[in-house]
Image (cartoon, rainbow, N blue to C red; front, side, top):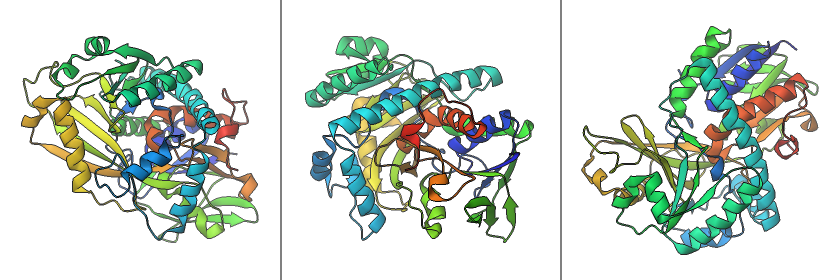
Length: 422
């Protein structure tokens, strides 16, 4: 095998290209946008959060979704549609909500996340990348006692799997991030993962794409892939909307939420559905104090939003809306996110410059990504690296490492079974 085509130039596609090029393959990346990281990787929450490994599918999920049904500002909004894929995915999601499956899925996410976080650090040092990274850990904060009690159980489980997520009192939380003392919402306590990080995923992806291009990776931007090319049970390349055919020895599908659409004409169903997430980026005024706005990356678990400092900006992101491929920005959801932010950090009430964004996260029912060949579906030569949900930035480098090991025929560092297409 010599040539590999990677479909998608988000953070997962670009990291895949980098690791595969390092193996000596001739790599071409194709993306419909005119630059890398222009869709789901564009304005995400900015966290490298192994500590955020609890999947949406857990024993409490069904009742939460029922409680939030129809609420435009709900942290997780399931918008019922006449959409077979949505209902099928929903049934698969409910199957993952048992305690045993939740535990197994957390283990799979944590083991890949730990490798990914390590690989990111190695890559950052080797290439001298600067993407507004902060290695100050991630602090989860709680304003509800029931949520906090649940978090303590999950933190204990994650420590069992190697993620050092440690319970903290309110006093200890305030020492880690003094800005929470300004909160007008009483904070009960938190958990802290010192090894987690934050940074600008778009900036990282752009910088890595530049490095990859300098090392021979070819990028074709502004090109739309229309179909996979097959010969018998082998995928031999792709055809573009222009009619051009690009042949390759292997093809990597890293199109996020759009990955299932390319396989649907071949009768193959990928268990991925788009979960729309939102972000609001606050432009911080000169002179604002570190005691007023956080510098440590935070997760407000009750509201399902995160906070990351990106230079002179604060990125607030989160929530989930299951409404198909609709990218329209819902003002009610944005307003709820900003209202919560200003209650936690009142000084942000004077910030008027806020940039809103929405992107589609590729969510599997289990929240475990698909990193696998497709031989079992009669598509030899096709590989998946998709379905990372809210953790694409967290898992990108580890997923690329696993993918390159599998393609090279090496025994991977982790058990590849949980990420295999079945």
